[in-house]
Length: 495
Image (cartoon, rainbow, N blue to C red; front, top):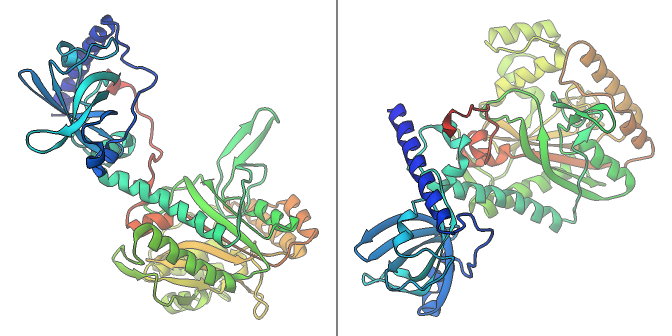
């Protein structure tokens, strides 16, 4: 079956190439640079009474074509809707750029055309364009398939998916809205949007393995950032900017699954003279605002969990939850005890550079799966967050929270560490973990410590990625990326 479909495609492409040559021989440009379109189809449909009887030019892709004697009916579609085109042999006016009645047969489904004509209705009452001129804008060499056979084809040929699946268009319009409303909310709260570097000489702001590239002009290796400029934005707090944010791309050279991507969009914002408790209030309202403005609701079904963002949010104790579910006290247990528990629970983990922090993280990932949320996870050990301020009442823990929704983390914020000596000590501890083989441990950033020595006010910082959008859609992360990264294919499908 697949071979016959490929053979059919090759045959159709050959026929279309022959038509293309005929079009060129007529002196018609099959790929003109512009269109004279002066109205969108959706506008005609919305306000037909105002446009009836008037001459306008529309443009779009041919989605339907049927000829009856000297009368042709076509359907064309633009980004706002579809409309019927009626072409009669004696209606067409002489125009060197337009196709004659006889040459309309050179058109195919999926071609883009421009139609100038009178807006009216057919005998059956359908809103139509009574064509006076038909101009080819783009000759399509391949027919649009009715469906894509699997998800790989859907991701690889998203441009086709968006043509044949209106739900995909709605999904990505909604995703654009998702980021738009966050920008709207933060600007309303007095935040300034900034742009900080994507290429870094020292990665910072997260525990992750970076992508490495080479900067030719400076002749040095650099990293693609693993956070949305956390250390850069905190330098802006040192500079005296009170509130900043960035929405931008982040890159992590790690595994792929339903939650994790290597190239994705994230938001980070920073607010001076604030802490993680105040941050919880702001984040809760931000999430409710985003949900309502993007999805029109605050109630979601995600991975079998019923999640209601409008209700009171829970507070979850990191240490207590792990103790309750695994009988391990992470503040006192040693690495050997934790490894035994991981094996007992059947948890598979990467043993390269394995340490106490990674053991605790694996135990937590096991425990979090049963937590529906929405809520804030607090009381995380200082070893797990080298950039967060210690709790005054318990210096073994940090002032950090994570947003928990449907068994996973969907956002993290904390009172930012602004003690340069404490920060230097924690970077040194992270450097030792890296030397022992932990590739996700954070790097020592001497320039950031220097900046802190000039003084950074008390600051709250928060970050959330597009994972939140995929969760609210209840879809795997790759399905909500418009062009997810795919392995390259050969040119066998180009024949």
